[in-house]
Amino acid sequence: MDSTLMLTSAIRELLAEALQVPIETVPPDIGFGDLPQWDSMGHMEVMLLLEQRYGVEINAETIAALTSIPVICTYLTENGHA
Amino acid sequence: MPETLEITPALPIPEHLCGEVQSKLAYVDESILTARVAPGGERITLQLSQPADGDVRARLEEKVQRVVTTMVKGAIRPKVQVLEDHLERPVPYHKDPNDELFACRELSQEATGIFTLGPLLTRLVAFFEDRFLELADSFQAEPYRFPILIPARYLERVNYFRAFPHSLSFVTHLREDLDAIDHFAAHAACDQHGALNMPLDAFSKIETLLSPAVCYHLYFALADRPLPGGQVTATAVGSCFRYEAINLTSLERLWNFTMREVIFVGAKDFVLEKREVARQRMQSVFEQIGLAYRVESANDPFFIGEFRKQVAFQSAFQLKFEIRARLPFKESTLAVGSYNYHQDFFGRHLNITLPDGAPAHTGCVAFGLERIAYAFLCQYGLEPANWPAAVRQGFSYE
Image (cartoon, rainbow over all chains, first blue to last red; front, side):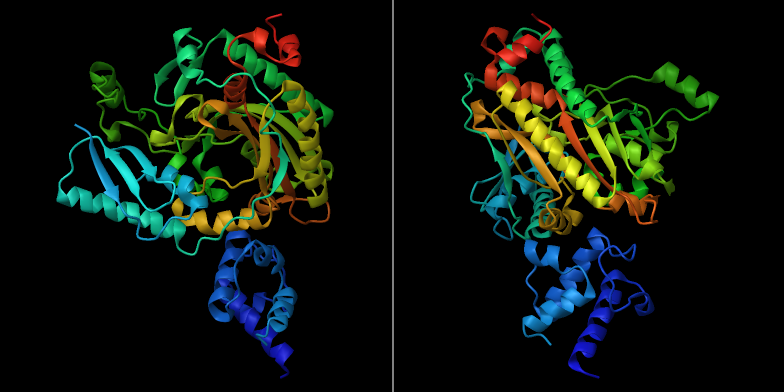
């Protein structure tokens, strides 16, 4: 498995954990609002877990930007987390 | 005999959170008369209604530290965005109008946070209400009338209990029980604090509350079906109830206040565009009125458990902007209205759908009628001759 696929898989697992949903309900292209659980509070749970696992700084810019798995993966890759 | 308790916060309170923490300390304990966070956030001073022994002080300090830790630990500094700044608009009055309002019986206090307004204030409220109705008309908003009661199950459905438990106002009535009603009729009386002397089991279970907001009623009315025509613009005025304990002071912060709202439901672009157009239209209205104010990003007063995450989210997505009017006598500002966007929160939680099946987005512009009248008097005084011409002419005094 290449690093992009591995990262996508890891972020799917992270989302499933943060949103407390089965991983089968988290497709690789999912975005904010696509699941009822990924609402404002769910999004902040995702951000907190990204902070814990990857050291992502939670600020207004990252909260507003990191709203889908592809964007999260791109952000992590560009910031040396892949 | 009041007693003072000084507490050093477990974590230094950043300046941008001092006011927020201070307002939440009101809910820590019934014995607290005043709570103050020093400007540097390094000390908290509580004034208590009675002397406190070691155990009581320890229990109070533990609760205070819980508030501080929950709100401060990991707090994210909000992104402050100022959309308009007219705070330096010259205004002629710099005194505290409260003494004069009470002296001339324009203001009478019935109980904490409950005030009666006299003729001048009432006419001033009507003047501002007319301006907001003109705004609503400019959007051809459909008029609605909403109840002041709201079912508990409605508020539960939009997570209100988790977000704002501290400010809820509950409604009950005597149980349908002849013995209980007869007993109440024969024995009900108030103690020296104004509290009824009846046991709680005389009252029904709580299924209803006093409504904390106006726009919620529209969203509930639209729930569980497709949005008619794909978009709705509505307006309503209503009484709102938010209990704020020792923070309930003068017309600045009422338990029972009145809001006029213009509400938008539809697609994201529709809601955001209307919110922005409303702000621009109100900018010229406030200029005519001569109001000194600023429009800046803000957050709702979430309780401590939800505070950090919800505030960070609101700030990141710029969901709320407040109209903050200047109070010259205390060199501070007071929120007199707000421009709000809720994304698709209500659409998803209440199953309000657009023609394509997606959840509807919602937003509202809301004006606190008592507050804007009060802020205006703080800037221009009680003598109509000193008011801007646009207010004098639109005021039913002339």
